[in-house]
Each structure stands twice: as C-alpha cells, then as structure tokens.
Image 1 (cartoon, rainbow, N blue to C red):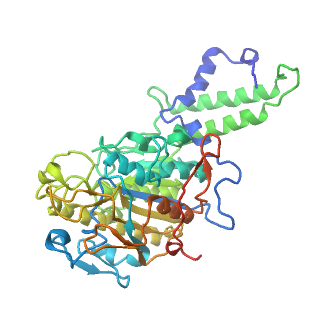
Image 2 (cartoon, rainbow, N blue to C red):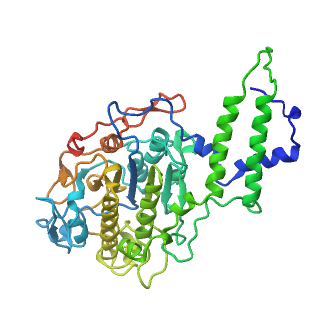
Image 3 (cartoon, rainbow, N blue to C red):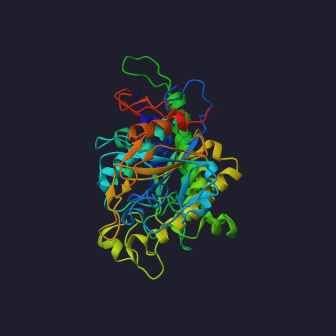
Amino acid sequence: MTVNLLHLPFSRRQLLQVGGISSLGLSLPALLKAGVPRAGQGGLAGTQNSERSCLFIVQYGGASQIDSFDPKRLAPEDVRGPYQPISTRTPGLQICELLPQLAMQSDKFTVIRSMTHGNGGHDGGMHVAMTGHSVPKVDTPYFGSVVSRIRPSTRNMPSYVWLQNLAGDVEPRYLKGGFLGSAYSPLRVGNDLDNPSVPEFRFSAFDPPAGTSTEKLLLRKELLQRLECSAHSADLRNRSGVLRSTKEPFAEFSRFQEKAVDLVTGTEARAAFDVTRESDKVRDRYGRHPLGQNLLMARRLIEAGVRLVSVTAWCGIAEGEKFTNVQTWDMHGPGAAAHLGSIFGTGSYGLGFALPRIDQSVSALLEDLDDRGLLESTLVVLVGEFGRSPKVSNQGRDHWPACYSALVAGAGIRPGTFYGSSDLHGAYVRENPVSPEDFSATLYRALGIDPGTRLGLDGFTHPASTGQSIEELLSAK
C-alpha cells in the first residue's frame, strides 16, 4: 500500500510528532502488535487453558539439590552436609530443615528430583535451562519469549516481564527474543541494587521520552486519528489503478499505537508494578529483600494480565557485606569463601542466608496465589541452571548438571507428590530422568500449549519443544 502523505492535511512537523509515539523506550506499539498470535496457533485441542500464566523463578548459579529438596542423610559426611531432613505434608517427601514453611505447603507443589543435562557452564547452563533444549542454538529463544508468542496477554499489558537482572557470567540472551525477534523480548525491571526492595525504587519503564509530557502524547494520538480518517477518505490507488482500502492497515496500526499511549498515560499498568500499594503485612510476609519483593511484584503482574514473569532468585546482601553481583546460588570458590563461611554460612553465598529467604518468599507466593484463586491458573517453576556437586570442596559445591531438583506448582501440575530419584550421593539420576526437552514439554502442556507448535520466521522450522510431556506430573483435569 502506498499513501501519498503530500495530499494529507498535515505539516511535516506534525507527522514527525505522530511518529514520536513509537520512539518510546520500549517501542511499545511493535511490542504490543507482536503479541497477536496466528489464528489457531499453539493451542491444545479440547483444553480450556488459554488464560493460564507462568511465574518462572530461576536460581542463578544453580542450587544444591542435596541441601534443599533431595537430602541424603545416609551419605558420607562430606556429601550430606550439616542440615537435617524434615518431613512434609507429602507422604515420603523430606526436604531440608531450612525450608519449614515450604514443608507445610508441600500439598501445593511437586518436587522433581531427576533433572539432568550435560552443560556445566553458567552461560551454557542458563541457556539450556531457560530454553528447554539440551543443545540450543545461539538464537534459541527463552521459554518466556515462546509463551508470549503463542499465548500473549489478552489485556493491555506486556506479555513477558523479567524481574531482576542476570550478571555478566551469562550472555544477555534473556533480554532478547532469539530467532522470534526483539518484539518477543521481555520488559526487564530491576537491575542490581535498583529493585523493589529499596524504598527509593521507582518503576520508570513506561515513562515517556525526556521532554515529552502526557499532553504531548495525547496530541500525537489525536494526530494519528486524524491521519487515519484522512487516509480512509482519500481515493488512493495502487500502480494498476485499482482502488485499495486503507481501513484495515490503518485501523491495526492505530489500535496498537493507542494501546501504547494508554500504557504510558494511564495508571492501571503502572499500578501493577507498584508493590507499595500492598499492605505492610503482605510485604513482610514475602520478605523485604529482593527475592521477596520481586515475587510480590510478579504476583501483581500475573494478576494484572502479564502472561509470563521470570524472576532472578537473588536473595540480596547479607548484613555487613557489600554488593558483588546477583549470583546468590553460585556457592563455591573464592567468592563464596569471602562471604562468612562459604556454602554453609550466613553470608550472601551461604545456604544459611539463601534458603530461609527461598522458604519465606516462595511459600508466601504459593499461599497468596492459592488464597486469591490464582494458583489453578498460574504455573510456578523454581529451578536453577544445574545442581551442585555431591562432595563439598573448593569452599562449597561445584557446578553439577548431571542431577538436580526443581519445584513446580499450579496450573496443570499434579500437587503433593514427587517424581524421579537420584542415587545415594545425589550425583546421578537413579530413575525417571527428566531432560530439558521433557521438562519444557511438560510446562507447555500445563499452560495449554502444544509442545510441537512450530516457530521461526517461516512459522514452521523450529518446534517449541522436541520433548515428551511427563503425564505423571500433569493433573487429570
């Protein structure tokens, strides 16, 4: 379609002002437009799960399975660690004594003890964990980008948000949409110490460009509407001289520009990112640390219509320490040794610091979602890049992708059970190994998404997952 702008009643200056709407920092119109799925794409026949959402918590660095959800009380002392196992509400399931609140809520979640893959590097392990592919390509998109492509938000909210940054040990793929394109990248909120746990934190992603007031944005919206009306009334012809209707292209363009302006000038979306609207009691229940307040914000975003929220499980800074990075769960080496007793201490890289915060925040999240009637429609995932080595050395436990644990809850996941097992030392999978492919296929199924949905620029080349969903983990309903 060719539109002769010279014949429309606008000056060059006015047209540049109109174009300024798309100069917002997020390129919001394109981001919102990209959220429209192709007709019939990705849904499972007979499912009623189109409104299911996901809250994906990633333990950056990889948590120790032995010291959390797969204790080994019969293993040698240099393997089992100092913590005792405690019983849960789930018959036969014991977890670490530092997770008492989660133990009391085990009827809401499932523990997988047989996660496994072969990449022990931070960058590679993160890419495997967040794509669901054992050998992902450089541009394989993260789970959130795929979900936002297939199951975009049905409200005027971003489909995909990432709370808290990852540090420099991984390539910033999490900020991109992979081969799906930048429109499917997440809106990232929070960076290092700038996060909702600090009193001065302010959500600013929807702020208009510097020097652009709300009044100016509304004026640009009005100019767009006038542009659309003028184009509709013009007799525009293509090169063959046949009349062409401009109604549909301009209507679509206008619709997403209008949604973008509403996001920036309105209050509803901004309010979803504002945890100060919660009571002190609720904020205290989640914990006044980065993990707690990020999970509280994530719950607010899910409630407001965001389809998938990823949260970096950074637990913050232990008292008396200085900020280093957000890799709470990389519990080995000189970094861990420098923080009050390494892996079993109470410093920023210590389980004595991190596990109680996981216990507080994740139990608060599950309880809150359940009380609000959201757990049935919200898939909760807690997992790391990999696990930790059975033997304690190097001031902690080293990277170990051969066997590790994950917690999953809500949506289509069967609650109050556990799946798979590891050997006596928690080193290797003993039964029911869960590959990244099978894990991702199971998560997609829980969200009502066909794991075999074809993606890529041609809409065919790449399946969302090449794995098989684990039926034992999925509820019958």
